[in-house]
Image 1 (cartoon, rainbow, N blue to C red):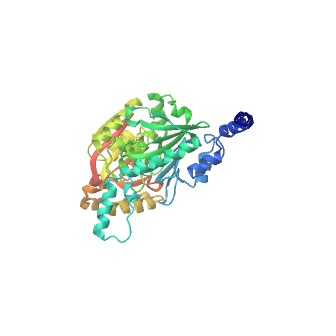
Image 2: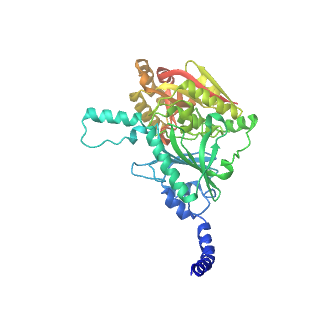
Image 3: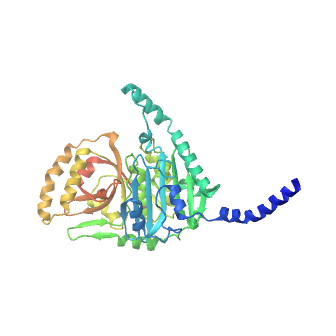
Length: 425
């Protein structure tokens, strides 16, 4: 009887196993990928031939910047949103020549750690402050929890990952867990105590494929073409990508990401924050950042230069005319910052530039009484000048509406920390 049962089972197994094998080998669909991720990332099994604008619209991510050959879209996610079973903070997409190039999703991270704090009801103010401090101090637990949750979700869908390294040089390289699906490499990075990030890139990029380095002469020609000279005397650099640093003190890494990407060097503000020893919630070591950026720049065949001194339209013209923006350390003065925004909006409708020049005179005089606060240190870009109005164009990493604003020479010097950085050929 046992033999008969065994033979019968063997026959049944022979009948069912091919069916089971087919079921197990059925490819994962785009619908299943979207369900696992929790966002409609894929319309079919190929993301890389999709128009970036269409994907941005499908996802509901805000357009962040659009240059001649690149674009970016970003969403700072609401607290209730979940992607891959974890709470995301920054969801970003970069496009090249109108098509999707890569996706970057950042989860628990030390820059946004204060938003991870959850206080139980009924605490006194003293108790709430203590609990908030405790949770912030132990923020690494949030990173570990998100990494584990995301890894489990991806492993359940795509099987065990492989260990890999992503990045072209030591300063910007990540140790990652990698899953591949239909020409997409899904990379999970969780540097200890820093952040959890999921990047979706073409498998060729994850394998180490990079574009050929642009020669010095070709790069300088390209940059020169990006210098716009307007009828009113403005000289401005266009085509600089925008990066919105979000509600955290990441102005230094965000500004450097913009600069490096403008020069064709891949960069990400969260990875740069590691190089700059950026603290919890923000605050970056300029010395550490310069060392990290210098290594990235050298690997791309460029060099990092530093300088100081007063700001004049003549002094910044030497680099702006070559299409090279300056990274500038300064202080944010809230009252002046609001006035500069208002004045820059009004400037867009000016027809009488002589009258506008007279309008600036009171602001030049008031600049003498500006007082700065060392706790409001900031980095932005100098991207233009106007010799006639004696104004400097600046660009902040706060979103598209801050891409171009104008201040007087006197105001610039009143709030300057006196340090400038330049990536040269």
